[in-house]
Image 1 (cartoon, rainbow, N blue to C red):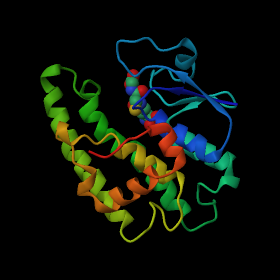
Image 2 (tube, rainbow, N blue to C red):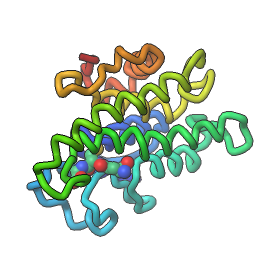
Image 3 (cartoon, helix red, strand yellow):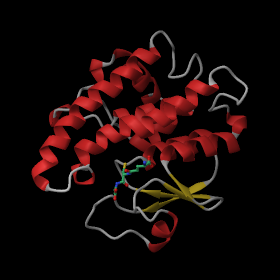
Length: 208
Ligand SMILES: N[C@@H](CCC(=O)N[C@@H](CS)C(=O)NCC(=O)O)C(=O)O
């Protein structure tokens, strides 16, 4: 049985969708992403950074992209990742790491400017750069999708779940680009939103 340290609105929601798609038993352990709230001791033992997602039970690990790769490989029968010898495998890995490393990083500039600037005087500057960086990194994904039906080809994969999760964080009312500015991304996001697993985790979420 997997255990997922979970906070609403966070990257743990994408991992929950993945666990649903894999149809493996799991339970959620409620935690917080509020800076002012203490994390459970067990969560901090696995991830001293205090952030989610954190997976425990059968394994102890953190980092959303790593958890995604691990779960899909471990439960490969579900077919949610291109196999190691398929031609889509490289693009799948590249995209997951790009999501985690570049797209998420752009979100962090806006949502967590304190991680990038040592004085609150510079937070607006970090956030301004974050908004621009979000537009730049999503455009790369938009162009990469091109005529593909899904992120890495003609087959739905865990990379589509990851993409969807990231799109739910785009808030035009904060000055972030709207997902609608990226029609290929939007199209895939809408398809992921239709899935039973996504509805279970995200409820009646709709793009602004
Ligand atoms: N690189 C990490 C980033 C995780 C992350 O920043 N999680 C956010 C929520 S999406 C969080 O837990 N924030 C609260 C905190 O940093 O204390 C990953 O992809 O798992």
